[in-house]
Image (cartoon, rainbow, N blue to C red; front, side):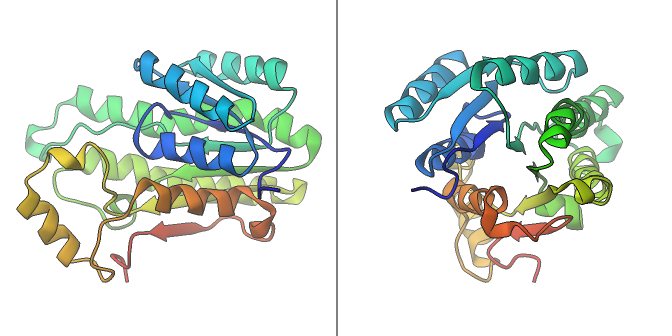
Length: 248
């Protein structure tokens, strides 16, 4: 019996990296998993097959959470296909880094739309279902950058800080209906994207972390399992820093 047995979860942006590992870990814990991808169809379909091999219902949906209508249509399709929904993980996100003096308006707007507006869109889309069943767990992926800021990432930091304020407000609004809203703020997580960086730079980042290592996508995924499951039934409106002690 997994921790998420008989639960139905939706994970946005799960064709690679952290989102992919969240989908895997949810399936390992017994959840049926619906997940979205934007352009990476082959990896998404491969993940769908992999999750089904674990004996759970799983389906990939091509959908862009940054658009309100697509979010609404997606949730409708999932309810039809899966028969319900209990967990939402808002994971989809992008970066368009630059110093403020070089950052274009377009790069600011795009990051806010994909990272922050998508959280509004998806939360609105699942809210009716969660209210009807008087339960649900929402997990929103922020970042340590959203907590402390970072030079060259004003747009990203603003979007990730906005997620924290949004989540806390939703927790206050929906708590009386047993709907929980929490945030995970990952620190330096080593993925295929960090593999392309200079090894000396990566090692210097590791050295600055109290646990002396970068995190893995699994570290984040297991934290998601905790917040999605009944183990955290009395936890809402919180920010869980999964950062090896970076913010300590």
